Image: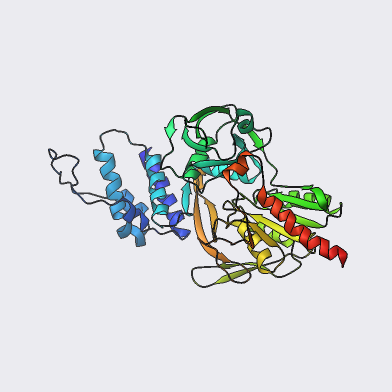
Length: 421
């Protein structure tokens, strides 16, 4: 068994290294000074670390020196750790995780098989959870809005609620994205959420029964005054056909202007962002993808968009990130749309999700940074809206949307003069 697991580990390591990851992360991430003591009564034990001939032979010749400390540490754990047997799969995954963390890039990471499966499920428009839009850029995971008729809404969760504990586990200091994953789970299971709500002195407790959530990634409707409203919540497998269907439906009603809502859209596939942008531009560049070696890939508009002339406003906020920033940035650069809201998240990098063999998860690697058509970089900066409008906690509680109200106002100023001419 150990021999098999070691072989798997070597194979996975070589695959990841071949894909361009920083192999030195294994060394820098896991070496510690020899002889560190946990109490004054203990004495350091001098051990001569060894690497077995099998391990040496299994490691590619040009990496044997580099990986010698890794195999020494592996063997020392198996020979000396107090609780035996150790979990070789957990050690292997921990090694890959440490390597990805050593890159120092918050967007490059290791996903275990369960996380990888769930991430793919969400991009397909179906997942199992409580059914709520959330903000992961805050100190605690924050509910931005429960989905209509979702477990979250039926349980009584509200916009602005902060998740301070999950199943009794304190979320203080825990990355909000990790907290989000903890809320997800099999349909029919129950998650206990401890909530901090503004105006309430004590924490609130909720038991929410998870369900299979089927969510449209693009939808549209007509507002008052002949304004069309289209919301895109993610850039996944079904976004393009759902957007096309929504646009065909609302454009048939001859709207005078269109609002594209990209608030709290955390992104998705780059190719889908090109598809979406192309519905609103007749030609031009959507984005430039800039690689570390100076090479550049240009993504151009796909001709034949359905809504290339209609007056337009795009709504963005601090949850607008990645692929949604690509769309908003391109439309802003060409003067095609007015951006309303607050500064976007600022994720101007491109990641590849590369599955590992034997269904052992995937590595998410930043391969490039992207630039808007005007060659602006928004990484860690974000897009600045043309019209700044904040959303307060009171707005959420009162179910007010001043950002949408302002978008309608801006459009009416554009549509009415045009109608008079």
